[in-house]
Image 1 (cartoon, rainbow, N blue to C red):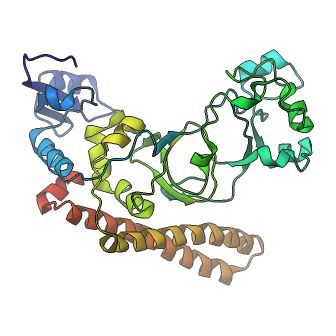
Image 2 (cartoon, rainbow, N blue to C red; image 1 turned 90 degrees about the horizontal axis):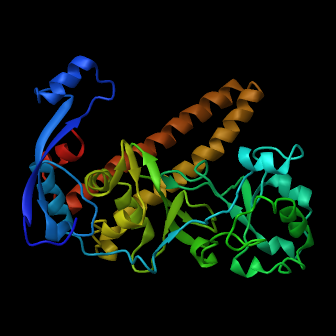
Image 3 (tube, rainbow, N blue to C red; image 1 turned 135 degrees about the vertical axis):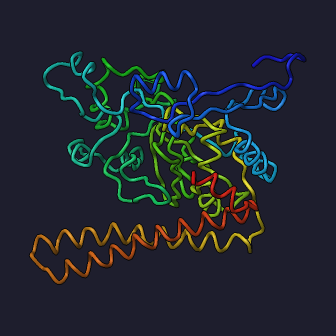
Length: 369
């Protein structure tokens, strides 16, 4: 949208098909704007001054009024320069088909280049000095909504731009030998040994919120308080200006999902939560005492999810050993733990509605009732 004094405010007629399996007859009905629960026809108001250099979303007047109400309560901005970061930009994490063809038959698709399994790490036989360059690496398998599993399955060779020097790994001979095998296919700007963009190491250390960039059906924000390295599938929020557990509860709420759907970026049903939507989030920061109920519910979710993981391992063992009584008891306990998570998430949703002063009718809009 360009700057202009003309048409500062105008209306756009929107026709939206809600049916993924639309047939030819329904297409005609859609084009003729026949009323149908599978179609949505509305007028969206556009204000250039408000939307200049921002994401443009289209919503009907009822939803737009609700979104405006929520945005007016915003009193906290995440700092885009100092509190939002991207994951590691790898030149090559694992060997792909194209790279395998370059390297030849002695290599396999999926071989670790800069990201390695424990078995591959063991084969390299790292010395004590080299261990300092190996960092725990996480994927979507470990990072869920709210909770992250600390037990990683992969490790990354974490080398920054200083490893652009061909002699930079002379004191790390085993890692050097490993990466030398892949030199033909490493395309990093910091080759031969540096990651393309390693990012600041401190970004990956300690407490943070991990944001899944692309998430189907609903956004996914993970609270972790351990060192955790990952690729550009994720963004990072690190702030000392707001309690991150409280912020996690807000970000995982249905209200924020609703806001991101209409004011963020969408690819079909997939939420694209990158830097720009994060900067625009309508975050309402409240006093520390008022944050405690949110934080307590998040703590209970984190504890329950960790127990779910632990109990599933015990359940597998009970099934393997034909211990039926133990199996029944564990299944019941797992059900209780899942209920804690579900109940707490619903409670957080209701608390967030109250926080933003939503009416019963506005809640129905958010929940699509």
